[in-house]
Image 1 (tube, rainbow, N blue to C red):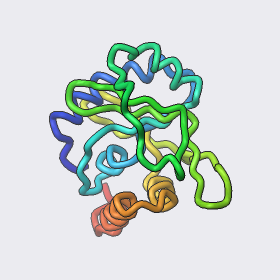
Image 2: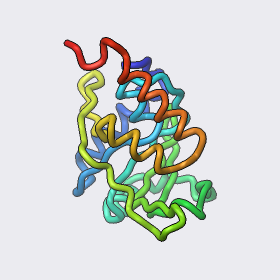
Image 3: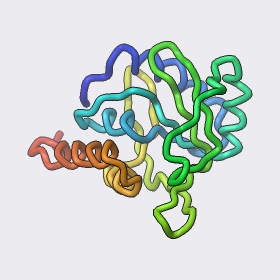
Image 4: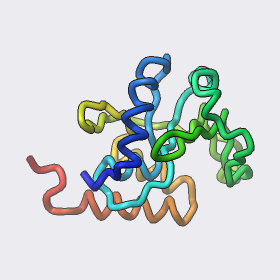
Length: 164
């Protein structure tokens, strides 16, 4: 696994237990956090959490005091969700409930696919499989996401990947 910064660890240590308790539906981290936990060499500026719209509502109530109400996510023409950004020690957390993507052919749900667990000092952090992460990142079509997909591909093509 690539280096988890103290800021990322502090954030995950606080939110992951709460997500396990308060989310009724499956949830996972996506984006740079998931790529890093899978082993790719990427930088992480925030933690993206994919949830159901109902669980996003629960988290908005739970973390109401931490919410950044003025934050508007970029890419509204391509992405929509039940969205909220929260301040946590370490890094901001962005919750995307029922994330949908429009690639020019209408709104389609972003499906996490097969989930795997990343173990981090006793935390079980759900994330899409590496193959599903690459699929999701490439579907987003942004340069930063293509770079993350490339980093995941480079990591998985390493001769030691997958060996015990």
